[in-house]
Image (cartoon, rainbow, N blue to C red):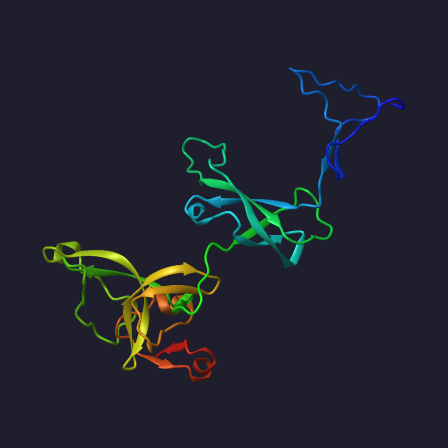
Length: 259
């Protein structure tokens, strides 16, 4: 070995030694890759490989900003940007009767130094696919899904008002009770405070953030949106009485209490 000089094509640190003293190293040839002696890593550039679901991959673009959370370094995130997007799904092995999620590999390069980082650390990434400023938005807990009846022109058909003493979602007419041309479908919306009661208003949503959904249509300036614990909003129906939680309303203008 004193007459052998081993050179690496890159600068870095040794992350794995694949051979022990006394073992035979095979020289690489055309048909044989040879023995791997050492594995090196260039730690000056840290890459995070993450898996993105097929439903979200169309929104991922090169250069988008990302926040990386490393399990071994809790309570801190690191900035990065997207440098690689897989064109084919990640191959997974499983039984024929098992439904496998389809994910694509996305590579994020970190823009800052990470102390005490090691190759192979587990991480997650939050990729910012779009941003909006000065737009209408509602808190995520305020959004509910209801089955509504629509006429042939796509307009909502209001159901007969029920006894206000009843609680829970308002029942929907059975398919046999629908008039010709009417259909029913699940619709996303929010409850708006009107006349001391909650009124379900369908909305069209845009992008989603950590706490809010962008609202593209359905609400008007001055509308007061009812929000609260998820289970409370889920159980609401048109006509339920609500009252203002004055303390919280002064803080952010969104919170209401079911009465």
